[in-house]
Image (cartoon, rainbow, N blue to C red):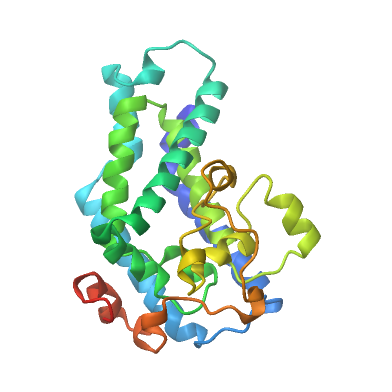
Length: 269
């Protein structure tokens, strides 16, 4: 199985990404949770433009990315997992949990450190939240995230299959929990015990600062509860809450160039 994932990494990741995106897009089109502020074609054009630019830049800067680092770490015998002899399934489970916790803390710091927030607010400036919001990240933030993951790979030394599965699960969950869908209160309450749900993550995109600085998880929901950053429901309700940032409640977030230059602008853009 490890050879299969390593050989067909690109196909697996792209297939899962497009498949989950299509399912979520159809779901939110047929049964949306909230009425959107902006027309989908305009927003989606900008958000897809951003992810295409992200992909190009990452491929140029990190041709092998985190998976290549995992292959190299294994070959060199670097990292904790390469020093211990345990079953592959246990290594995969632990690696996914460790890297998910790492991404949680990266997300927290992106809200705490001014330079990182300048990059991350491109994501939060979207005045709607749907499946396309999951791909709206500034290239600078994506590059720094990749550096963090590569560094962690050399520290922990997980197998390449563990990194592939982690990134596939992370991307799929991000598409799911950014989606403009309703699972129903009962299903959502049960499901968020195991995974971050759309209702749980939507709180994080609230324009109320206290809610923006909560529910940082992308995949596993436990870190927010463990570290005290969990809020169950938005103050104004899911239908009444304002999405985005208070200083950008206009049409600027729907412009590609403005979004790319946002990190270099002042507080009010």
